[in-house]
Image (cartoon, rainbow, N blue to C red):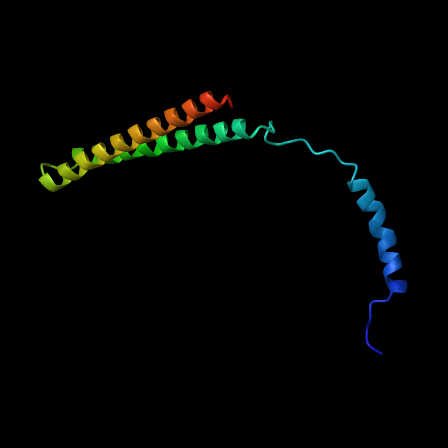
Length: 112
């Protein structure tokens, strides 16, 4: 006869599991996000992403300056450093404009 899961074999296992599941149902978990408001969560996410973007832009400025300073007069390296400066500046402008637009939208709809 094959090993078949019979109710008579399942009852002792259920007797061990059910008391634990009942105890687990009474546990209260705190909200790790600190809020249940979606606009507040989106605002926090935007703030974090803006900080990360600003950090990346700073790193690009440092890299562009390094290329420019170590170019030793090689015009190609100077041009590459200047382009990195230009694109990092454009990136910062886009980031700040996007942040301002989102904040304005939140102010209009009264979310924050």
